[in-house]
Image 1: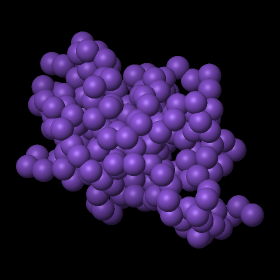
Image 2: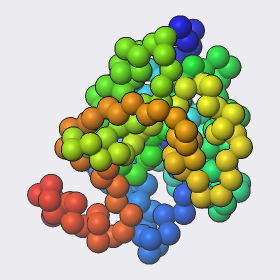
Image 3: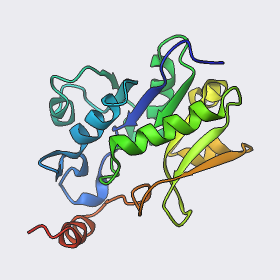
Length: 203
């Protein structure tokens, strides 16, 4: 069994937030704190190693993580797309890491309990090492995704704006349903944020 070290959680937070028209979606307040900090706190609550990729660790996103016991990873080539974050994160994973959960930081409904559910599903699958992927309650594929160590070399060779599809190619993926649409609710525009807040009854 691959239990010698805790699973790592990777938050790829080096994207440009281009559709927000000048706002940074990862700094939008959710539950009273910046979304990126909220996601990092949820990840830390699981006891996992947490790594966050950032375009500039000293910038505003880095400041949102001040005081948290996690590793910040600079991605100077962030303009390439998601693959740059994956390569940098793969190179920074602690030795012996048995698996890595990729937690997109722009999923504002994901909770620490959701992350624990994925980790529990992984533990229940051992000694098999499947890819696990969160879905909405209706089965729609979403995030996070847990990638076993045997696929780390694939992470290290990705290029371009490549996300989970390339990692999962050819793999049998085990689905883990999360409540509601937590695994699929991502907010990329000011209009989407406004609609989501209205649905929550926020001003």
